[in-house]
Length: 214
Ligand SMILES: NC(=O)c1ccc[n+]([C@@H]2O[C@H](COP(=O)([O-])OP(=O)(O)OC[C@H]3O[C@@H](n4cnc5c(N)ncnc54)[C@H](OP(=O)(O)O)[C@@H]3O)[C@@H](O)[C@H]2O)c1
Image (tube, rainbow, N blue to C red; front, side, top):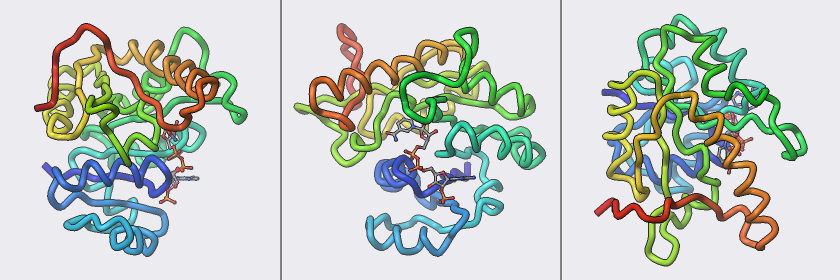
């Protein structure tokens, strides 16, 4: 299966660091592909192929790193290209000042995305993983958690299998509706990390579960 990543911002650069050693030939798309070429050298991610968004959308599994305000128009515009594919969604729908969410309590960004592209299998992941974690994924020798969600059971399992070699504990997070909680957990962890002085190095680890990635 071909895998691509869209976007070269903080999460895009973080994700490529952990994805590229395990997913050979991963395609990294940007509105400015020349930027990808520079970043591939700078970050020393061998085997990564630079691409336009159009080329990256040819992959079977597409991981995006767009903001929520840009995501729904992007999904609407590329509905046909995204049909029958897996789109991994990392969005948290924060307000501009990061004080709240732009979505109502009874929904989530992942569910809103799925509504716009019903023929695509939306899979949530990495919503609680702040970009600094990718530089140093283990804290005191322990991995943090990634909760993988989807209403498409098979696609959820496909993404879990894809992410399992990465330095994270990858969990089946259930259906997309769980993102109403998961996305809001990010708002809370951000506030806590700022209060306790370790923002933006923050992620979650569920206590009591013995799962390791070894
Ligand atoms: N920052 C975090 O720690 C964190 C943690 C968890 C989840 N997230 C989620 O991850 C997403 C990205 O966050 P980020 O911090 O990586 O943001 P960022 O640094 O601003 O990067 C966003 C990227 O989106 C791409 N993009 C595509 N279409 C765009 C458009 N119309 N306008 C602007 N940019 C566009 C750009 O990549 P190209 O220029 O290469 O096209 C841009 O670099 C957000 O949805 C956020 O909620 C972030």
